[in-house]
Length: 260
Image 1 (tube, rainbow, N blue to C red):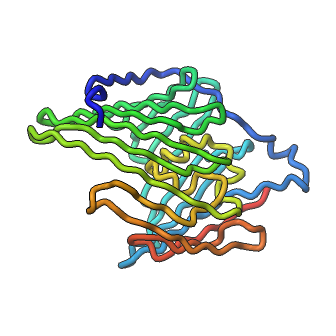
Image 2: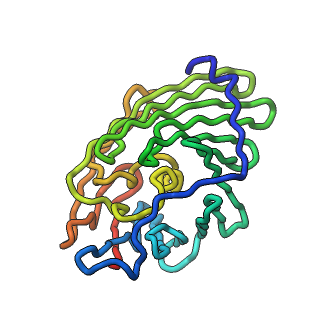
């Protein structure tokens, strides 16, 4: 991590963004049928299974995301509000996050001690993310992620971390590369900005591209972080991802859709 990141300063202001929209629901012709992800199911080990239910507005943007533990225990909800001034994310716990856009820069505050700025390209795809985190007892961390896209797919993410914890400095860097199939992803017709989809999924990029992941390779990370993943995909009659067998604690994932 280059030492100049130590002097980064990121400010979040409450101004905003106008995001790309799709056709109104009542103007969609039969041949222009839109397929949206309605339910995302994660079958994990040791009964750690969850499912997420999505709700959308007439422009096909996500307005609510509800996460449940099986069978029907609500874990949390996220309500997303769009207007001419920007976008507001509100958690069921009462927490609110306001995302601010100036030109091609988006900024927000995570919690009470992390300032984050995202740079997007002309397609609203994130290309850079920087953050400054100040913790307790003088601990701090500064970092950067750089995202590379090709044909609407995230094909590479480079990470750099630099910080100090308990009086000791540390530095970590790594690269993640991705490959894809040629089928439409679960969020293919979703008009929610890609950078916000990536935010919702912890900046992993696993579900935010035009197509579906086939491999994910973590390169140059410390050995205890290094993982190489291969995904097994199956599709429904519409050609969308129906199931995906993935890595780590996830046995499999299922996707259910609505048509508009």
